[in-house]
Length: 430
Image (tube, rainbow, N blue to C red):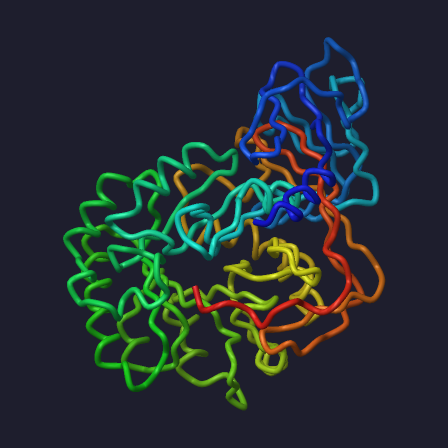
């Protein structure tokens, strides 16, 4: 991330973040690493001897995991969700945030990112892109393989404030290059992958395979997918495969596996039968919009047939102002395409949690879970969003993060991406 983008973000969230008494405060210095200064609260002061640390009051709570869509208050104590109910007295909380007119959801999950900053070129800083946009959990999808995963773990996962899990690239070298499974067959090593997964079950959630979708490479891709299947079956974890409509490749996928990037150009005239069959087979689909793996023509044709992916994520995309896209960008675009507000929220909360079965319970506001909360607004206006081919569409509303709560820590939100065409045609498929 460039320094101008970093400075813009720091200005948006403020030099100090609100702190709930007795809890750790996180703010961001110029080097992007979390620091621990004191700060003045953004939430109003309540009773110092109250039962809750923070009360998010009067918002429209949408929590698909509990089939909840109603005006409710969310009370937090000691970094956990303590209560979700109507009309909790403000006097019961030390800090009160007035969420009237806002949407309150579980902390958002971006289940397709690349966050190995300084390790690969195609990466973003999870704390900077995420916290300003309500994102508290991300899944890094194949940035590292068996020989490079420990770098991601030690230097990113263990230092970031964002909760980070990963899919292990079936290539041992990961995304140091973008043709990683085509360089040398010895780099597609089942035993190395199994060893790395076994030693890191708390962080590795599955296997990533980046086939290029070319018919000419089908025989090679089949061998790579067979190796990935061997690893998946040995470890009990799912495969995430790059988009392909080749029946032979799709046949290797099993219930619980994931197919990603459904809206790549060029377009078929309709959703092909083997893709329609995925839901019946129990295979999930992960969808991106914005400027990577997205053609408006393709996504519009799909939704006209009533076809939507199961989860919503970013991969490595750009917002309309050219900065790295947060998950608010595809959320806004899916809303434009006709997906209901409740299903958009589910696509970044309960559905990623269901698909990935993370070790920690996330994507919910159930009492007792870690207090990760996104506080969102829907800005009204005319907002131009371009696809991978620089074809624009004008959206009438877009999501803006008003605030983020991570583990009970209150963070101010970032501004929405500015209007205007995207600055690039996207990046190589990651």
